[in-house]
Length: 387
Image (cartoon, rainbow, N blue to C red; front, side, top):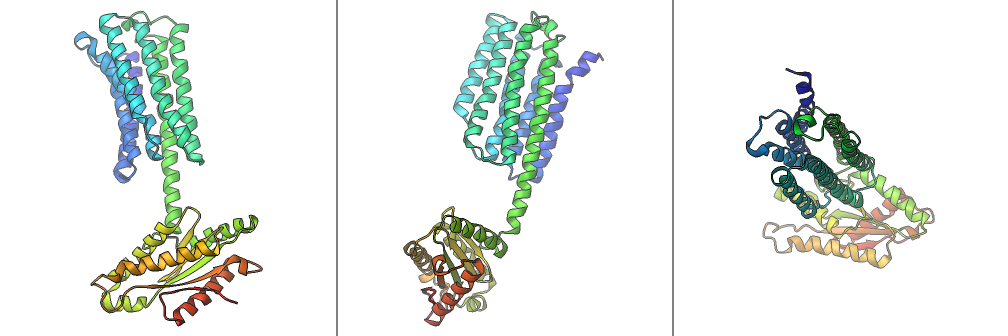
């Protein structure tokens, strides 16, 4: 077994190892579909090198076409994974057009008008386009977070090394005149080297992104109520404090709503805790449907919910509270399941301009007094805090 043959196994071995690593990770976290995409990309590139370097010749040298197809498709698939992770639209049409056009030209220069240098040039241009297209799409849709910036720079780095690689074929023309000489050339060694560097750096970037995503998920779970899918008390207080600080800086008004499900203990006693849990989930969904991206909402007690509307007017806050109360009541109004006690909610509101020194704890205390007043007046109503 020659040393050259062992060197030729480095790239496919790298691809297979990374395929196995990402595939095992996907088996543990199947909701991360982009991990499966990356693993398949590494597997395709491994086959691309195996077809080129280790398989015996096929009829009409068709193994070279299979090698080109697997490598181009594999690298493109790896580069698509970051787009999948960020739910960015994948440029399927332009990438498919590039791949099909490149394969047609490569077949031409292999079978119809054999020209190795032309095939190297076409494959290199196609490869760079297959990297550039997802890179361009990713840069326009990425978020401003470390993991996204890391992936972007690795994609740029991958494009750079694959642009430099074909230039070496012309700076060191030895070995590009025949296929037998190509396998022993400096250029072909650079092909292996550039792939291994790209594959490992992209794998590291993806692994870092997965780790950071999992950490973010754990942080989110720590401040999220599993039943209502809103923030828990800790999460609400953190978000509300920040929103109130921004409101104070911008000299704008914020309104706090404190909602309590009426006679919730009776609902649990009459219909069971499963029904009580469903009522809480329904209420959380209605709050989410009425909220925008500035709203801070959380379940801060058993059946108590707090909603902060930053930069809100008296009228818009009143409309929010009325819609919340009415939609929640309407949800069960004609439901035969609730014959004895229909779920309703009482809501207390307080505006930050009613406080000389606006603090969250003070607003919560005043909203609670307004809520208590709404309960005393018969429940299922909205009540503003009054000094």
